[in-house]
Image (tube, rainbow, N blue to C red; front, top):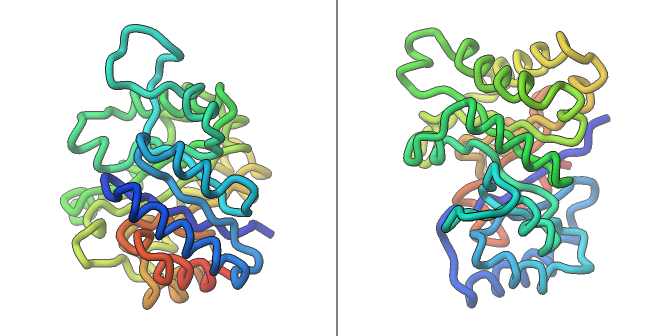
Length: 250
């Protein structure tokens, strides 16, 4: 049985004070979360604070992006080895905001996926379609292209230590959420696509839902057979809201 995973994506939010308050609240409430794996992905500048506060707890932490390069003259970039130097376990790869605002292609995302795996990080590979693509009936084709790019570069074996997050772009920060049935349909498709490469990896990989999951809709989404947790945006910024979702994952 796959262990549920609830991962917070703080995006570009927080201060040293708010991070300390949030992590303190998570540590206090985490005892009520029995089986779900819980993680937070912090802005790079707050990863040292996150490590200092979470070290020794059951909560894991990670970054929100990574460079394809291991080192060198790449001003502003964060190498995978820098993330592991501060105890990061996860890193988000190819979030729709990176794809949309920073022009990240499927090919570049695939290289980042490979760089993360090469350094021992667990990539959370984000895939998903825009509203236009959904209305045009190309959801599966878009998701397949994003997934195939990483498979071509890294191979299916790399997915044995990876996570996939399905994030319908039309449901991120819009207040609109895919119905549990809509989300399950895509999650099932992703798992079936992986099964064409490795049935074992397809069965074991955690596939998260990343489209505006919150306390009030978490149970319905997480009750679906192929939804193994959530990549949580806004609701991850308040300890009580985030822990409500983590409890629902049980």
